[in-house]
Length: 115
Length: 113
Image (cartoon, rainbow over all chains, first blue to last red; front, side, top):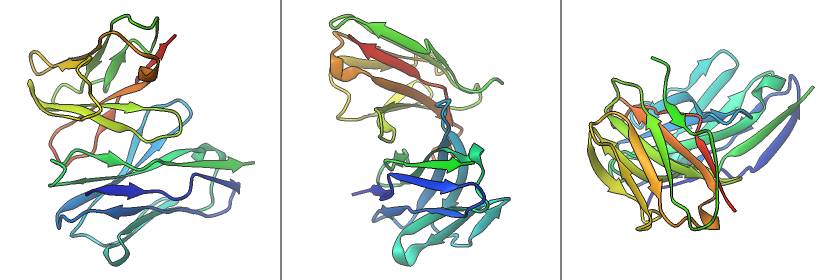
C-alpha cells in the first residue's frame, strides 16, 4: 500500500522563525518519486520540488530545504527565516510504479506565519 | 501557454441536477488528471488520461461520474444526479509524462444545495 502521512495539521510561527514540515511515506516500490506542493490561500497548487528514490542528496533552494532519508521513509521540508507570504497549506506527495505513477497526496500541513 | 485552465471557477447547483466541468491542460502535456479536494484534506485521485485513453478510475468515482478527453486535448468531468456529498473542489492537472510533476489548474468549486 502507498501512503503519505503529514502528522502536523497546523503550525503557527512568528516571522523569521525556522519551521520544519514533516512527511512520512510508505511504499514497497524501489522506484518512486516524492514531491512537495504549496497551496496558498488563492487555492492553486504549486509544485515546489521532486526527488526520486535514488537520490538522497538534500536540496536547498533559497530559504527552502528538503531532507530525504530513506532509512526513516521521511521527506521533510524546512523553511528558514519564514515570511508571512509562506502562509499556505503544504502537501507532501508520492508516486510510484505500483500506483501507476499517479500521485497520492498527504492531508497537508497548514502553516501560519504571523508578522 | 497560459497553464492549466478550468471552467467554471464556481458552480452552485441543486441536488439532482447534472453538472459538467471543463479542463484545458498545457498543450504539450499528454497526461491529464482529475482530483477532488474537500476542506482540510489533500487532493484525492479520481481518474487520469494519457492522450485520449482513460487509464484508471478511482473507486471514488461512482457511476454518476464520467470523464472524457475526446481528442487528447481538453477534458470534461460530468456528475449526474448531484448529491450534497459531491460538494468539493475539483482539480485538474497535467504533466508531460508519468514521472513528472503536475501543473494544476485553479479548480472548480462545486456546491450542491
